[in-house]
Image 1 (spheres, rainbow, N blue to C red):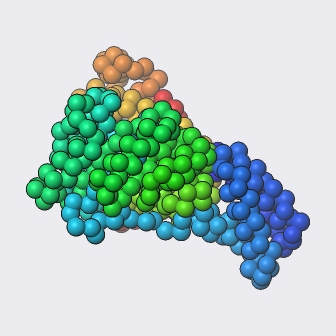
Image 2 (image 1 turned 90 degrees about the vertical axis):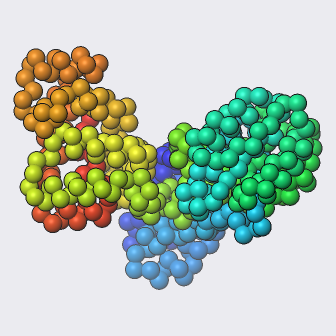
Image 3 (image 1 turned 30 degrees about the vertical axis):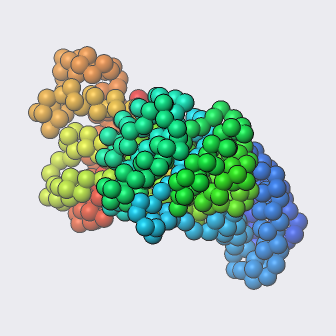
Length: 457
Protein backbone atom coordinates (compact mmCIF):
# COMPACT_ATOMS: atom_id res chain seq x y z
CA UNK A 1 0.00 0.00 0.00
CA UNK A 2 1.36 3.43 -1.04
CA UNK A 3 4.75 1.89 -1.97
CA UNK A 4 5.71 4.59 -4.48
CA UNK A 5 4.95 7.40 -2.04
CA UNK A 6 6.81 5.63 0.77
CA UNK A 7 9.90 5.13 -1.40
CA UNK A 8 9.95 8.72 -2.65
CA UNK A 9 9.36 10.28 0.77
CA UNK A 10 12.00 8.05 2.35
CA UNK A 11 14.54 9.23 -0.22
CA UNK A 12 13.50 12.86 0.24
CA UNK A 13 13.76 12.76 4.02
CA UNK A 14 16.98 10.75 4.15
CA UNK A 15 18.98 13.74 2.95
CA UNK A 16 17.68 15.81 5.86
CA UNK A 17 17.85 13.39 8.76
CA UNK A 18 21.64 13.50 9.00
CA UNK A 19 21.87 17.29 9.25
CA UNK A 20 23.36 18.59 12.48
CA UNK A 21 21.51 21.83 11.96
CA UNK A 22 18.51 22.70 9.83
CA UNK A 23 18.38 25.97 7.95
CA UNK A 24 15.75 27.44 5.69
CA UNK A 25 17.96 26.47 2.73
CA UNK A 26 18.31 22.75 3.43
CA UNK A 27 14.69 22.51 4.56
CA UNK A 28 13.71 24.11 1.26
CA UNK A 29 15.62 21.41 -0.66
CA UNK A 30 13.93 18.67 1.34
CA UNK A 31 10.50 20.19 0.96
CA UNK A 32 10.96 20.49 -2.80
CA UNK A 33 11.48 16.72 -2.92
CA UNK A 34 8.55 16.10 -0.60
CA UNK A 35 6.34 18.29 -2.81
CA UNK A 36 7.43 16.38 -5.90
CA UNK A 37 6.79 13.03 -4.18
CA UNK A 38 3.26 14.08 -3.18
CA UNK A 39 2.40 15.38 -6.65
CA UNK A 40 3.65 12.14 -8.22
CA UNK A 41 1.39 10.31 -5.76
CA UNK A 42 -1.54 12.22 -7.35
CA UNK A 43 -2.24 14.31 -4.26
CA UNK A 44 -4.26 17.43 -5.14
CA UNK A 45 -2.08 20.50 -5.73
CA UNK A 46 -3.95 22.63 -3.17
CA UNK A 47 -3.43 19.92 -0.55
CA UNK A 48 0.29 19.65 -1.35
CA UNK A 49 0.77 23.41 -1.07
CA UNK A 50 -1.00 23.69 2.26
CA UNK A 51 0.86 20.65 3.63
CA UNK A 52 4.34 21.89 2.69
CA UNK A 53 3.57 25.41 3.98
CA UNK A 54 2.62 23.98 7.39
CA UNK A 55 5.72 21.75 7.55
CA UNK A 56 7.98 24.67 6.61
CA UNK A 57 6.38 26.97 9.19
CA UNK A 58 6.99 24.46 11.98
CA UNK A 59 10.44 23.35 10.77
CA UNK A 60 12.09 26.78 10.57
CA UNK A 61 10.67 27.83 13.92
CA UNK A 62 11.76 27.04 17.46
CA UNK A 63 10.45 23.47 17.26
CA UNK A 64 13.45 22.17 15.29
CA UNK A 65 16.20 24.59 16.23
CA UNK A 66 15.97 23.60 19.91
CA UNK A 67 16.01 19.88 19.15
CA UNK A 68 19.10 17.75 19.83
CA UNK A 69 18.35 15.84 16.63
CA UNK A 70 16.99 18.32 14.06
CA UNK A 71 16.73 15.73 11.29
CA UNK A 72 14.57 13.42 13.39
CA UNK A 73 12.52 16.38 14.58
CA UNK A 74 11.81 17.28 10.95
CA UNK A 75 10.50 13.76 10.23
CA UNK A 76 8.36 13.97 13.34
CA UNK A 77 6.83 17.19 11.98
CA UNK A 78 6.17 15.58 8.58
CA UNK A 79 4.51 12.61 10.27
CA UNK A 80 2.34 14.87 12.48
CA UNK A 81 1.24 16.95 9.48
CA UNK A 82 0.44 13.82 7.44
CA UNK A 83 -1.67 12.62 10.32
CA UNK A 84 -3.40 15.99 10.61
CA UNK A 85 -4.03 16.01 6.85
CA UNK A 86 -5.89 12.69 7.11
CA UNK A 87 -7.90 13.59 10.19
CA UNK A 88 -5.88 13.02 13.41
CA UNK A 89 -7.86 10.04 14.79
CA UNK A 90 -10.21 7.32 13.60
CA UNK A 91 -13.84 8.43 13.53
CA UNK A 92 -16.15 5.54 14.37
CA UNK A 93 -19.57 4.73 12.96
CA UNK A 94 -22.48 6.29 14.84
CA UNK A 95 -24.14 3.31 16.49
CA UNK A 96 -25.87 5.22 19.28
CA UNK A 97 -29.08 5.83 17.29
CA UNK A 98 -32.31 4.02 18.13
CA UNK A 99 -32.19 0.71 16.20
CA UNK A 100 -32.10 0.19 13.37
CA UNK A 101 -29.17 2.54 12.70
CA UNK A 102 -29.54 3.09 8.94
CA UNK A 103 -26.34 3.33 6.88
CA UNK A 104 -26.76 4.65 3.32
CA UNK A 105 -24.01 3.66 0.88
CA UNK A 106 -23.25 5.94 -2.07
CA UNK A 107 -20.68 5.92 -4.86
CA UNK A 108 -19.96 5.37 -8.53
CA UNK A 109 -20.39 2.01 -10.25
CA UNK A 110 -17.37 -0.24 -9.81
CA UNK A 111 -16.14 1.43 -6.62
CA UNK A 112 -16.98 -1.66 -4.58
CA UNK A 113 -20.11 -0.58 -2.69
CA UNK A 114 -21.80 -3.98 -2.52
CA UNK A 115 -18.67 -5.82 -1.37
CA UNK A 116 -18.02 -3.04 1.17
CA UNK A 117 -21.53 -3.48 2.60
CA UNK A 118 -20.74 -7.14 3.27
CA UNK A 119 -17.32 -6.29 4.73
CA UNK A 120 -18.86 -3.71 7.07
CA UNK A 121 -21.59 -6.16 8.10
CA UNK A 122 -18.94 -8.73 9.04
CA UNK A 123 -16.85 -6.10 10.81
CA UNK A 124 -19.85 -4.95 12.89
CA UNK A 125 -20.77 -8.54 13.77
CA UNK A 126 -17.24 -9.46 14.83
CA UNK A 127 -16.09 -6.29 16.57
CA UNK A 128 -19.32 -4.68 17.83
CA UNK A 129 -21.51 -7.79 18.19
CA UNK A 130 -24.30 -6.12 16.20
CA UNK A 131 -27.09 -7.80 14.23
CA UNK A 132 -27.10 -6.55 10.64
CA UNK A 133 -29.64 -6.46 7.81
CA UNK A 134 -28.73 -5.51 4.23
CA UNK A 135 -30.93 -4.39 1.33
CA UNK A 136 -30.23 -3.42 -2.27
CA UNK A 137 -32.06 -0.43 -3.76
CA UNK A 138 -30.24 -0.90 -7.07
CA UNK A 139 -33.16 -1.72 -9.39
CA UNK A 140 -31.09 -1.27 -12.54
CA UNK A 141 -28.79 -4.26 -12.15
CA UNK A 142 -30.40 -7.58 -11.09
CA UNK A 143 -26.89 -8.91 -10.61
CA UNK A 144 -26.30 -6.32 -7.85
CA UNK A 145 -29.25 -7.68 -5.82
CA UNK A 146 -28.09 -11.28 -6.33
CA UNK A 147 -24.52 -10.38 -5.40
CA UNK A 148 -25.65 -8.78 -2.15
CA UNK A 149 -27.81 -11.81 -1.30
CA UNK A 150 -24.83 -14.13 -1.84
CA UNK A 151 -22.47 -11.96 0.22
CA UNK A 152 -25.06 -11.61 3.02
CA UNK A 153 -25.15 -15.41 3.25
CA UNK A 154 -21.34 -15.52 3.50
CA UNK A 155 -21.12 -13.02 6.37
CA UNK A 156 -24.26 -14.12 8.22
CA UNK A 157 -26.25 -10.90 7.67
CA UNK A 158 -30.03 -10.82 7.18
CA UNK A 159 -30.89 -10.18 3.54
CA UNK A 160 -34.04 -8.19 2.79
CA UNK A 161 -35.24 -9.19 -0.72
CA UNK A 162 -35.92 -6.66 -3.45
CA UNK A 163 -36.40 -6.81 -7.23
CA UNK A 164 -36.14 -4.58 -10.29
CA UNK A 165 -39.90 -4.02 -10.54
CA UNK A 166 -39.99 -2.03 -7.28
CA UNK A 167 -39.37 1.65 -6.61
CA UNK A 168 -36.13 2.27 -4.64
CA UNK A 169 -37.94 4.45 -2.06
CA UNK A 170 -40.50 1.70 -1.37
CA UNK A 171 -37.73 -0.90 -0.99
CA UNK A 172 -36.04 1.24 1.66
CA UNK A 173 -39.31 1.96 3.51
CA UNK A 174 -40.19 -1.76 3.62
CA UNK A 175 -36.67 -2.72 4.71
CA UNK A 176 -36.72 -0.27 7.63
CA UNK A 177 -40.11 -1.61 8.76
CA UNK A 178 -38.82 -5.19 8.64
CA UNK A 179 -35.61 -4.26 10.48
CA UNK A 180 -37.68 -2.74 13.28
CA UNK A 181 -39.89 -5.83 13.41
CA UNK A 182 -36.82 -8.10 13.75
CA UNK A 183 -35.07 -5.76 16.25
CA UNK A 184 -32.03 -5.45 13.98
CA UNK A 185 -29.25 -3.15 15.20
CA UNK A 186 -27.95 -1.90 11.83
CA UNK A 187 -29.49 -1.68 8.34
CA UNK A 188 -27.25 -1.12 5.29
CA UNK A 189 -28.88 0.33 2.17
CA UNK A 190 -26.87 -0.40 -0.97
CA UNK A 191 -27.73 2.14 -3.68
CA UNK A 192 -27.31 2.17 -7.46
CA UNK A 193 -24.11 3.52 -8.92
CA UNK A 194 -23.43 5.07 -12.29
CA UNK A 195 -20.34 5.15 -14.48
CA UNK A 196 -20.28 8.92 -13.99
CA UNK A 197 -22.06 11.54 -11.91
CA UNK A 198 -25.38 12.59 -13.46
CA UNK A 199 -28.45 14.55 -12.36
CA UNK A 200 -30.78 11.52 -12.37
CA UNK A 201 -28.43 9.62 -10.06
CA UNK A 202 -28.16 12.55 -7.64
CA UNK A 203 -31.93 13.12 -7.62
CA UNK A 204 -32.57 9.46 -6.82
CA UNK A 205 -30.07 9.21 -4.00
CA UNK A 206 -31.35 12.46 -2.48
CA UNK A 207 -34.85 10.95 -2.45
CA UNK A 208 -33.52 7.76 -0.83
CA UNK A 209 -31.70 9.82 1.78
CA UNK A 210 -34.93 11.64 2.61
CA UNK A 211 -36.81 8.35 3.03
CA UNK A 212 -34.08 6.51 4.94
CA UNK A 213 -33.03 9.37 7.22
CA UNK A 214 -29.69 7.57 7.80
CA UNK A 215 -27.35 8.10 10.75
CA UNK A 216 -24.43 7.49 8.37
CA UNK A 217 -24.16 8.39 4.69
CA UNK A 218 -20.96 6.76 3.52
CA UNK A 219 -19.27 7.49 0.21
CA UNK A 220 -17.40 4.47 -1.21
CA UNK A 221 -14.58 5.35 -3.59
CA UNK A 222 -11.80 3.51 -5.43
CA UNK A 223 -8.51 4.80 -3.97
CA UNK A 224 -6.66 4.01 -7.21
CA UNK A 225 -8.41 6.94 -8.90
CA UNK A 226 -6.18 9.29 -6.86
CA UNK A 227 -7.26 12.91 -6.49
CA UNK A 228 -10.25 12.15 -8.75
CA UNK A 229 -11.56 10.15 -5.79
CA UNK A 230 -11.46 13.26 -3.62
CA UNK A 231 -13.05 15.43 -6.32
CA UNK A 232 -15.89 12.91 -6.85
CA UNK A 233 -16.46 12.74 -3.09
CA UNK A 234 -16.66 16.55 -3.03
CA UNK A 235 -19.41 16.56 -5.70
CA UNK A 236 -21.41 13.94 -3.76
CA UNK A 237 -20.91 15.89 -0.56
CA UNK A 238 -22.45 18.98 -2.17
CA UNK A 239 -25.63 16.98 -2.87
CA UNK A 240 -25.69 14.70 0.17
CA UNK A 241 -24.73 15.28 3.81
CA UNK A 242 -21.93 12.70 3.79
CA UNK A 243 -20.70 11.55 7.19
CA UNK A 244 -17.63 9.68 6.00
CA UNK A 245 -15.65 8.07 3.21
CA UNK A 246 -14.53 4.48 2.67
CA UNK A 247 -11.49 3.90 0.47
CA UNK A 248 -11.50 0.62 -1.45
CA UNK A 249 -8.68 -1.23 -3.22
CA UNK A 250 -5.93 0.40 -1.14
CA UNK A 251 -3.90 -2.81 -1.52
CA UNK A 252 -3.50 -1.95 -5.21
CA UNK A 253 -2.86 1.75 -4.61
CA UNK A 254 0.88 2.37 -4.78
CA UNK A 255 0.46 6.16 -4.84
CA UNK A 256 -1.78 7.17 -1.93
CA UNK A 257 -3.20 10.36 -3.46
CA UNK A 258 -6.78 9.62 -2.41
CA UNK A 259 -5.92 8.95 1.24
CA UNK A 260 -4.06 12.26 1.46
CA UNK A 261 -6.60 14.38 -0.46
CA UNK A 262 -10.07 13.20 0.58
CA UNK A 263 -10.25 14.74 4.07
CA UNK A 264 -8.81 18.09 3.01
CA UNK A 265 -11.02 18.47 -0.08
CA UNK A 266 -14.31 17.17 1.38
CA UNK A 267 -13.90 17.93 5.07
CA UNK A 268 -15.24 14.42 5.72
CA UNK A 269 -13.32 11.71 7.58
CA UNK A 270 -12.07 8.49 6.03
CA UNK A 271 -13.64 5.84 8.27
CA UNK A 272 -12.51 2.55 6.68
CA UNK A 273 -10.26 1.21 3.96
CA UNK A 274 -10.52 -2.02 2.00
CA UNK A 275 -7.13 -3.75 2.01
CA UNK A 276 -7.87 -6.77 -0.19
CA UNK A 277 -10.50 -8.78 -2.02
CA UNK A 278 -11.35 -11.16 0.83
CA UNK A 279 -14.51 -10.46 2.79
CA UNK A 280 -12.59 -9.84 6.05
CA UNK A 281 -10.04 -7.48 4.48
CA UNK A 282 -11.38 -4.21 5.86
CA UNK A 283 -9.63 -1.96 8.38
CA UNK A 284 -10.75 1.03 10.40
CA UNK A 285 -8.82 4.04 9.06
CA UNK A 286 -6.36 5.35 11.65
CA UNK A 287 -4.56 8.46 10.31
CA UNK A 288 -1.65 8.08 12.74
CA UNK A 289 -1.03 4.47 11.67
CA UNK A 290 -1.34 5.26 7.95
CA UNK A 291 1.05 8.22 8.31
CA UNK A 292 3.53 5.88 10.00
CA UNK A 293 3.20 3.37 7.13
CA UNK A 294 3.63 6.07 4.49
CA UNK A 295 6.92 7.10 6.11
CA UNK A 296 8.11 3.47 6.19
CA UNK A 297 7.85 3.19 9.99
CA UNK A 298 5.46 0.25 10.03
CA UNK A 299 2.19 -0.13 11.91
CA UNK A 300 2.67 -2.29 14.98
CA UNK A 301 -0.81 -1.73 16.41
CA UNK A 302 -2.57 -2.97 13.27
CA UNK A 303 -0.15 -5.89 13.09
CA UNK A 304 -1.01 -6.88 16.68
CA UNK A 305 -4.74 -6.56 15.90
CA UNK A 306 -4.26 -8.87 12.90
CA UNK A 307 -2.53 -11.42 15.13
CA UNK A 308 -5.29 -11.22 17.73
CA UNK A 309 -8.06 -11.72 15.15
CA UNK A 310 -6.55 -14.13 12.66
CA UNK A 311 -3.89 -16.33 14.26
CA UNK A 312 -4.85 -19.69 15.77
CA UNK A 313 -3.69 -19.31 19.38
CA UNK A 314 -3.94 -23.02 20.20
CA UNK A 315 -1.66 -23.99 17.32
CA UNK A 316 0.81 -21.24 18.26
CA UNK A 317 0.90 -22.43 21.88
CA UNK A 318 1.34 -26.03 20.78
CA UNK A 319 4.30 -25.13 18.56
CA UNK A 320 5.86 -23.01 21.32
CA UNK A 321 5.73 -25.99 23.73
CA UNK A 322 7.12 -28.32 21.09
CA UNK A 323 10.09 -26.05 20.37
CA UNK A 324 10.75 -25.53 24.07
CA UNK A 325 10.94 -29.30 24.60
CA UNK A 326 13.59 -29.46 21.89
CA UNK A 327 11.43 -31.42 19.44
CA UNK A 328 12.03 -31.07 15.71
CA UNK A 329 10.33 -28.39 13.68
CA UNK A 330 8.97 -30.59 10.88
CA UNK A 331 7.29 -29.87 7.55
CA UNK A 332 3.81 -30.08 9.09
CA UNK A 333 4.81 -27.24 11.43
CA UNK A 334 6.25 -25.35 8.47
CA UNK A 335 2.97 -25.72 6.59
CA UNK A 336 0.99 -24.41 9.57
CA UNK A 337 3.20 -21.32 9.71
CA UNK A 338 2.59 -20.65 6.02
CA UNK A 339 -1.16 -20.89 6.64
CA UNK A 340 -0.96 -18.52 9.61
CA UNK A 341 0.81 -15.96 7.44
CA UNK A 342 -1.79 -16.28 4.69
CA UNK A 343 -4.56 -15.82 7.28
CA UNK A 344 -2.97 -12.49 8.16
CA UNK A 345 -3.27 -11.21 4.60
CA UNK A 346 -0.08 -12.60 3.12
CA UNK A 347 3.49 -11.39 3.07
CA UNK A 348 2.83 -8.01 1.41
CA UNK A 349 0.28 -7.04 4.09
CA UNK A 350 2.63 -8.07 6.90
CA UNK A 351 5.64 -6.26 5.43
CA UNK A 352 3.57 -3.12 5.08
CA UNK A 353 3.02 -3.09 8.84
CA UNK A 354 6.42 -4.40 9.96
CA UNK A 355 8.57 -1.67 11.53
CA UNK A 356 12.34 -1.45 11.31
CA UNK A 357 12.89 -3.25 8.01
CA UNK A 358 15.46 -1.62 5.76
CA UNK A 359 15.10 -1.54 1.97
CA UNK A 360 17.27 -4.63 1.46
CA UNK A 361 15.33 -6.70 4.00
CA UNK A 362 12.00 -5.65 2.49
CA UNK A 363 13.25 -6.49 -0.99
CA UNK A 364 14.48 -9.94 0.12
CA UNK A 365 11.32 -10.78 2.06
CA UNK A 366 9.17 -9.32 -0.72
CA UNK A 367 10.52 -11.98 -3.06
CA UNK A 368 8.22 -14.41 -1.24
CA UNK A 369 4.93 -13.86 -2.97
CA UNK A 370 1.69 -15.41 -1.79
CA UNK A 371 1.54 -17.71 -4.83
CA UNK A 372 4.76 -19.34 -3.68
CA UNK A 373 3.07 -20.07 -0.32
CA UNK A 374 0.30 -21.95 -2.13
CA UNK A 375 2.88 -23.86 -4.14
CA UNK A 376 4.82 -24.84 -1.03
CA UNK A 377 1.61 -25.94 0.66
CA UNK A 378 0.73 -28.10 -2.38
CA UNK A 379 4.16 -29.76 -2.21
CA UNK A 380 3.78 -30.57 1.50
CA UNK A 381 0.23 -31.87 0.94
CA UNK A 382 1.59 -34.35 -1.63
CA UNK A 383 3.86 -35.93 1.00
CA UNK A 384 2.95 -38.76 3.34
CA UNK A 385 2.72 -37.93 7.05
CA UNK A 386 5.95 -39.89 7.57
CA UNK A 387 7.75 -37.79 4.95
CA UNK A 388 6.53 -34.58 6.57
CA UNK A 389 7.92 -35.70 9.92
CA UNK A 390 11.20 -36.97 8.42
CA UNK A 391 12.14 -35.05 5.25
CA UNK A 392 15.52 -36.84 5.15
CA UNK A 393 13.61 -39.83 3.72
CA UNK A 394 13.01 -37.94 0.48
CA UNK A 395 15.09 -39.77 -2.13
CA UNK A 396 14.87 -39.34 -5.92
CA UNK A 397 11.80 -41.52 -6.52
CA UNK A 398 9.86 -39.98 -3.61
CA UNK A 399 10.68 -36.49 -4.87
CA UNK A 400 9.44 -37.37 -8.36
CA UNK A 401 6.16 -38.69 -6.93
CA UNK A 402 5.65 -35.56 -4.79
CA UNK A 403 6.36 -33.07 -7.59
CA UNK A 404 4.12 -34.95 -10.03
CA UNK A 405 1.33 -34.96 -7.45
CA UNK A 406 1.67 -31.23 -6.73
CA UNK A 407 2.34 -30.05 -10.28
CA UNK A 408 5.71 -28.57 -9.33
CA UNK A 409 9.37 -29.21 -10.17
CA UNK A 410 12.24 -30.93 -8.36
CA UNK A 411 13.86 -27.47 -8.03
CA UNK A 412 10.74 -26.17 -6.25
CA UNK A 413 10.86 -29.09 -3.82
CA UNK A 414 14.59 -28.71 -3.15
CA UNK A 415 14.12 -24.99 -2.53
CA UNK A 416 11.34 -25.69 -0.03
CA UNK A 417 13.50 -28.25 1.81
CA UNK A 418 16.34 -25.73 1.99
CA UNK A 419 14.01 -23.06 3.39
CA UNK A 420 12.60 -25.50 5.92
CA UNK A 421 16.13 -26.41 7.04
CA UNK A 422 16.97 -22.73 7.54
CA UNK A 423 13.92 -22.22 9.71
CA UNK A 424 14.67 -25.43 11.59
CA UNK A 425 18.14 -24.09 12.45
CA UNK A 426 16.62 -20.84 13.65
CA UNK A 427 14.19 -22.75 15.87
CA UNK A 428 17.04 -24.82 17.37
CA UNK A 429 18.96 -21.69 18.31
CA UNK A 430 15.87 -20.28 19.99
CA UNK A 431 14.52 -23.42 21.64
CA UNK A 432 14.76 -21.93 25.14
CA UNK A 433 12.17 -19.75 26.83
CA UNK A 434 12.90 -16.87 24.46
CA UNK A 435 11.33 -18.71 21.53
CA UNK A 436 8.37 -19.97 23.53
CA UNK A 437 7.63 -16.50 24.89
CA UNK A 438 7.85 -14.98 21.44
CA UNK A 439 5.48 -17.59 20.00
CA UNK A 440 2.96 -16.97 22.79
CA UNK A 441 3.28 -13.20 22.59
CA UNK A 442 2.84 -12.98 18.85
CA UNK A 443 0.51 -15.92 18.50
CA UNK A 444 2.76 -17.68 16.02
CA UNK A 445 4.38 -14.80 14.18
CA UNK A 446 7.84 -15.69 15.45
CA UNK A 447 7.72 -18.93 13.49
CA UNK A 448 6.05 -17.21 10.58
CA UNK A 449 8.87 -14.78 9.88
CA UNK A 450 10.24 -15.26 6.39
CA UNK A 451 13.15 -17.68 6.47
CA UNK A 452 16.45 -16.12 5.47
CA UNK A 453 17.26 -16.38 1.80
CA UNK A 454 13.72 -17.35 0.80
CA UNK A 455 13.32 -16.64 -2.90
CA UNK A 456 10.48 -16.62 -5.39
CA UNK A 457 9.33 -20.12 -6.29
